Length: 115
Image 1 (spheres, helix red, strand yellow):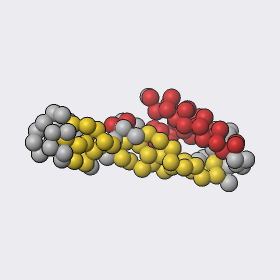
Image 2 (cartoon, one colour):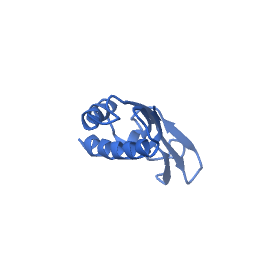
Image 3 (cartoon, helix red, strand yellow):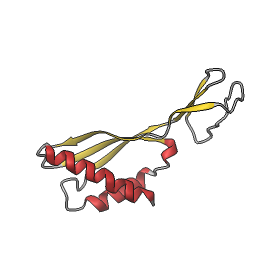
Image 4 (cartoon, helix red, strand yellow):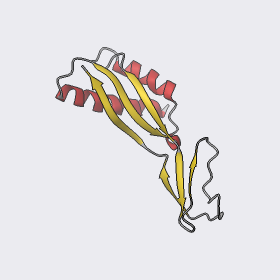
């Protein structure tokens, strides 16, 4: 359900920038979303559609780039990118628990396509 409040914030940002640029219509919004954000794309689009009704963003498509989890071991320097949700927060090479998260928590608007 957290998609509803997130998409409300996204809509506010999109409308602000669209209005500043004298847009007549928002065609699409390009987003980068990390795997750890746990956003379900279908729900995000559904909530966005509901919230944007009767605005210039009504009918806009959310184009979502999924960012996989990527970690680096502070002990040995090994980096690992997890393509599925079977990530590990210990080093897969030396088994150290001293890792840092490099990618996977992103949630950003990359661009907005307007007319």
